[in-house]
Length: 301
Image (cartoon, rainbow, N blue to C red; front, side, top):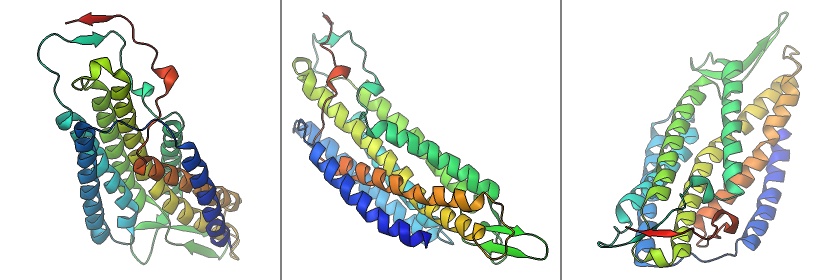
């Protein structure tokens, strides 16, 4: 019953969010140039490599573990493409005298205002869910792996499987750590790179490119986190709610309510996943005006 309710609610949330995001997505178009097109091409290559890696992970994984890790592989490939594009594709500064702003550039000035905090909260939620499922999982007798949810009482016992125990959570935690490290590296490179040729007189265009690159970093991280969360939360929620409402009566009282909360948490995660896809595929970036005050006095080097 729970899975039917969730499946019915997901399309509604996805459609509503798509309309809101697409309606609010109008903004300043990222300036098109040879530089920006090469950076976009580098991202596309990284995405293709990530998809290829995800296909290999899907084939190599057992008991659906590849399905859990595949989104992280896609996100890693895209993030690597961003880091490479910002490092190698961006043109070097022209020789000779040049100007430099005294205002320091910070990552938080370019991160999308709404999507950035939402992805951060999703990371925290995924970590909390992995801790919960790892602590409550038990060994599956048929496979010998920790991917079951069991309880036992006075002459009764009950088991639900699959359940995202350490068989799934440990590899996913390592993949999540790799995603966050590569995302931090890519974000740092986006902010630290020098301004492009001719950008000294048009800081707005350069800032728009940085904002777009940071939006891609945040969106790729969100996809790598929200997609596996949806699968893990739905599986864990069904198992917990099923065990708590089973006929055996050996499950702790908290399993049923927690299963409902975990199961319903798939809805905001799916909405976030859609928002990340919209951000990733969009070609517009709005500059957060308060974050970019008029630059102070410039010095000639």
